[in-house]
Length: 64
Image (cartoon, rainbow, N blue to C red; front, side, top):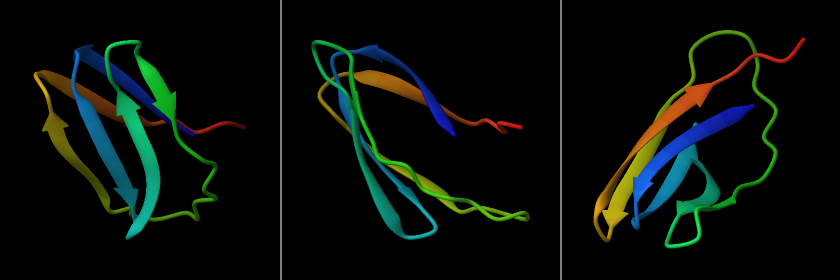
């Protein structure tokens, strides 16, 4: 699972291993992403932005 902490009113696009998950952030704190199965090993995470003013932290969280 991917979790976000977004401050400000910015939008961020997130890509994992080249697949776009959607955007997070905005004035209402919208977190519109989709599920993406991840295999064991390294993952390439790219967060593009901000569009607006703000910061984002992205966390890969393991669910057992």
